Amino acid sequence: MRRHARPQAAAAEGGSGGRILLPFTSQAISRRALEAAIRLARAEGATLMPAFLARVPRNLALDAPLPAASAVGMPLLEAIEQRAAAEGIPVDARVGRGRTYRDALDRLLAQEPVDRVIISAAEDSRHGLGDHDLAWLLATVPAELMILRPAPDDERRFSVSAVGGHF
Image 1 (tube, one colour):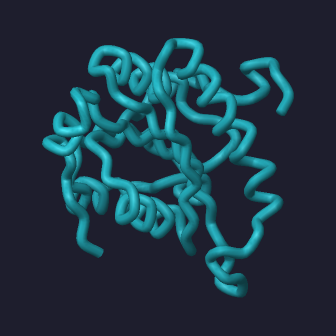
Image 2: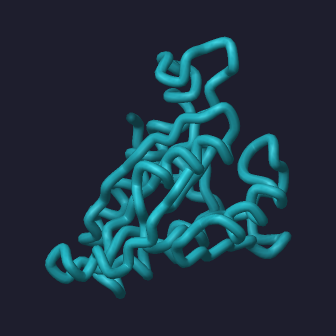
């Protein structure tokens, strides 16, 4: 799939600081990744684009309803949206669907050009993007890429339960 970088497009759209993609795959995201995305969006006047990546089983059509995945990702997507909005940051949330997390991210990037991607490295590729996926990102994504891996003893996560709300 062909993608186009978009830094010049952001300036042409009226001085916007661009779009920062923050993909996640589960009920929690690294607090450091979220904080970095919010700080960068605030500093640059950018729009934060949190994106829940959902895996679609091969026996289903890509556009099939995914109630179990939605129950996992949508509450966190909304919590991230509320957190960013509380900071005065514009938000444009997305759901990426694919056969794997990488496929979902690839499809999303093909549809939604972004200026930056901030991603939290997963320790277990079954629950997120693994080492091979991160190498793929470095080789193929035509945008600035920030991969954050918290220190081994840093278990601070942003989740719906950490927010204390119900959705």
